[in-house]
Image (tube, rainbow over the protein chains, first blue to last red):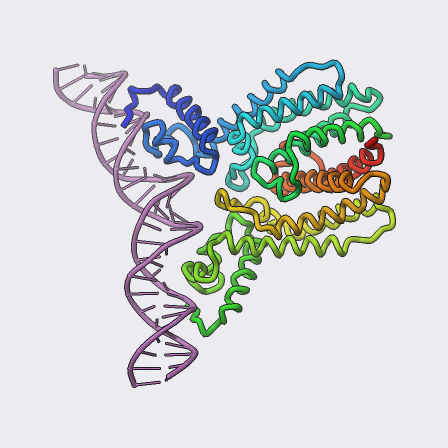
Length: 201
Length: 201
DNA sequence: AAACTCCAGTAAACGACGTTCAATTAGACC
DNA sequence: GGTCTAATTGAACGTCGTTTACTGGAGTTT
């Protein structure tokens, strides 16, 4: 078994989170456990609890990375002067990212934290910053509408797309429709653009 | 412990499903287990496996009831000659039903069946019949568009609303927005109507 | 260099989980 | 009453997250 000389406190902490990320990415959140993680890093399960509050703590750190990665994917989306096209480009960035990191993305929303456990605030802030980017496109489409309306549309399109993609990832989209997720997402984007374009207030 | 004289095979089967439904409705799917169920009916856990293949089997039967109940809620939605109003009425029926049966509704989508386990076909058919009802409203709004377009819009609005409601039920809608689910759902309906009304093809 | 303190890490345990199975036992039939 | 069958049990298996008493090596003090 590994001894403390092998890794400093910080090294071990990042070893744990890195390995957790790999395991979840490869095997999915269902196959992830305290014992499989500790086995993978060459320590026993108890050690994890000296460095992290619980498994939730570890998964949350992995999830944070996943969210940061999505923000980067957004930042690297193909630029376009047309806000409508830009919304589609963000959709492609989103689709590309979650396709690449399917299991990690699912972990973000499938991992069941124990009840009452509040969502860490930077989760919310990370998502809010993505929605701000989307809302800006809506503002560009109809500059006459106020900022709140654009933000709400951004939230709606984000929630809709996220949800449909989640359904797809968990294999349940086929309960509702037998169509390609990429097509569905872009159709949703078109739908939101069309509705926003024709809004009266 | 209960003996076989207490319940016939059929009585016991329905006792199991009834009790499972009650337990899930009251405590949520997370608190539901083979042992808690068997304790509630006065048998041991092993007995469950003589009458059902596994827990999945039992939960699936409960879920089927939930879907049937939703179909009834749709059928009992306030009628309206205006297809746009009717879509909102269906949305209200949906919201009312899942508010009433929150935990059962969550069980439908949160219960993790083991991998590769195919979704029972009548699940899909039950949902398809709901979507047909919605698609009819879209057909009435724009009779000039073909049936396939209406059906796809029906699927899209169903998926969007279902997803947003799921996010809300699992407490994760607040990750994205801080708004009342009823408002959001009706706004989504309006948006889909607006977009459908202005479709070009 | 020996003694001492401290704490990272271990192994074992706890109480849960889904599921299986040999043994028992109650009811049905002859 | 005896025999057969099938329902039911209780213990067991291997899993899970988490806690805990103990150990032994590293760093510090004498």
